[in-house]
Length: 193
Ligand SMILES: O=C(O)CCC(=O)C(=O)O
Ligand SMILES: [Fe+2]
Image 1 (tube, helix red, strand yellow):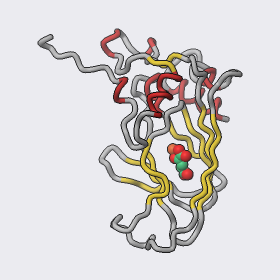
Image 2 (cartoon, protein in one colour):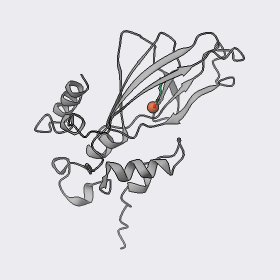
Image 3 (cartoon, protein in one colour):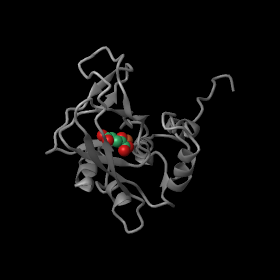
Image 4 (cartoon, helix red, strand yellow):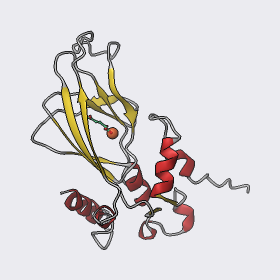
């Protein structure tokens, strides 16, 4: 299913072949992980308070480093995504659906066409939340760089090339909420240089 969705996304950008991204997460040496999260109820909070002053963070804001994340949860809400204006909106909980999240490496591969979505989880006052996430990652030696078919010349490339192993190591040395792609962003070239 992850490969099918990645192939539809690759098609959507007009990239050929359509397995350009899915092949990165389907080989034998891929570095994918599966995580199970449990958020116990937090009776001290008032979930009806909508102005955000009484929230308890269950999982702090972050982006996922891999290529794509596939999430499924029970019917307790809590997941929120961050919009470009800085506001947070809740993702409705639906135990019969999968939620796909673009992750950092896909943002780099598509030179920013797909954006890695910042998200967080709020604790719920009454119900416990359980989520399971499949983080589809490439092999450790996979080089990650904007695809040449998406850029007309090297100047348009927004990121320096790295291997997945290099990126993973750099995330270990950062805080969860950091913009972990920032060290790999190409510096804008001043017109006076
Ligand atoms: O539990 C959730 O809904 C999301 C957790 C998450 O973002 C993560 O494990 O990376
Ligand atoms: Fe996440």
